[in-house]
Image 1 (cartoon, rainbow, N blue to C red):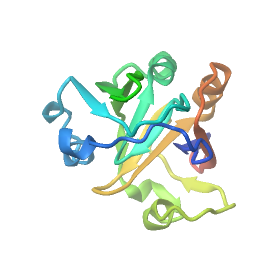
Image 2 (spheres, rainbow, N blue to C red; image 1 turned 45 degrees about the horizontal axis):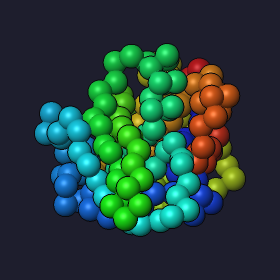
Image 3 (tube, rainbow, N blue to C red; image 1 turned 60 degrees about the vertical axis):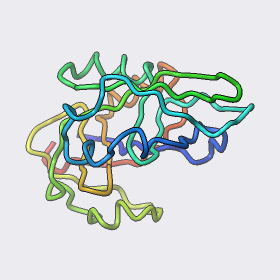
Length: 178
């Protein structure tokens, strides 16, 4: 089965950049999968930007997805917990709702190559990512205390793109079992 690793596309230079996320949210709760310690809704300020790009995936300390991505994912996977984050520019009063997703988490031993350290380093690789999944999943993450790697099955990824999702960087991944 083919999957894609989903990352924030850095070519969208005017994507919102949070300014006070770490002061308003204890992001360790995200990495430790303690959704119950994160408020249902949080307003996070962003750095002022009059030419803001509306993107659907942000990764700044923790991942944030737009309602467009959330709606598509819910067609494929309905057991996901989401926490709401309103990004707000106090200078221009621009605001947009994003969600912190708590996707199914897998340990890094499902990652055959590259290693979790290499994958999280940010270095570009042309080699496909190789996975060995216990079962077919529409969306999952491989996470540890400091890194987050989101994967989506090919049909879900294609649906996101057909629905106009912006700001995604895709890297091919193959499940050797599927």
